[in-house]
Image (cartoon, rainbow, N blue to C red; front, side, top):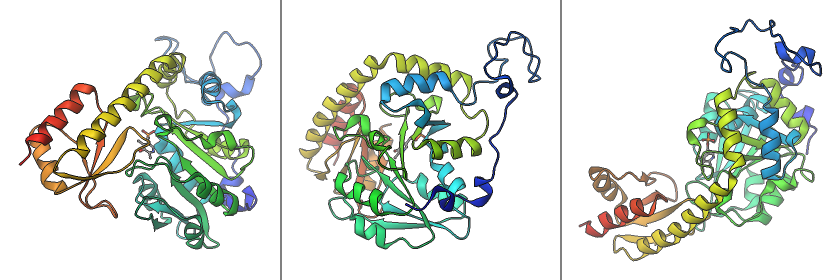
Length: 345
Ligand SMILES: *Cc1c(COP(=O)(O)O)cnc(C)c1O
């Protein structure tokens, strides 16, 4: 790996960390808050929230097995996807490499930041070769994007190939594990100590059932976390989100129940799809959705929409011709979908 300073944009490297009104008396016990021009009424919403979400990070550290100092929290993974561009990529000069097809936000953020995006096509099993990704890099490549389990294909990427990329690439490797709670593969967030150039992403939007509160996580070295903290909006995670997330983290038994129910439903729904004459192939899934190749994805999609059932048409994506991406719902919802597809003519 190049040094973190060599990888970081010079203007970001030289930023002083933001200091909020509340940072400046740290350590003392305060009783009267007349420092931040807040309204003294309407507690607790009148006070600015903790800019570094210390209490929530400590709770998450326990659940995720990662020290609190290695955790960044953001306004959804969206924020954790945008920040590496803003920290490391000089607009109009640097580039990033990613597998293709994958989650669309990596390219959206590249375009917004005016950073060249270099997609490298997966093979017919939706796997990638580390060497091919590395061959797509040049001296201006700052980031490599991996997503495992991958969206929209649903499968885990091969672990040995991911390790090769992390060990051989000179820049930063981001492994998005938004769906890892549905998979048996070991998370890369436990390997931060061996890999200073690794960022692992997680979210409360999928297994944790909290897409509405917008809470994403990045796990990385303390040096990378410090960079993110300098660049983020000071109060990027609001009080209501911090409170709700703490409640959910303390009730993780509920999350485990959801995940095991969803996994049971996933095998049942995939099996039902395999039996449909209009389904040509169901691809293996390590996530809470699967990809299915149909006879005519657009027509089937339209038919379902007319019945008020919405799946994702991924037909126009490379390697996904005639594919629908189906999220696992409740047993009743899944039965409704299968019932409708059995009636399709
Ligand atoms: C759904 C998803 C996310 C979650 O994004 P949030 O902004 O945290 O809701 C992240 N990465 C991938 C690959 C996803 O599919």
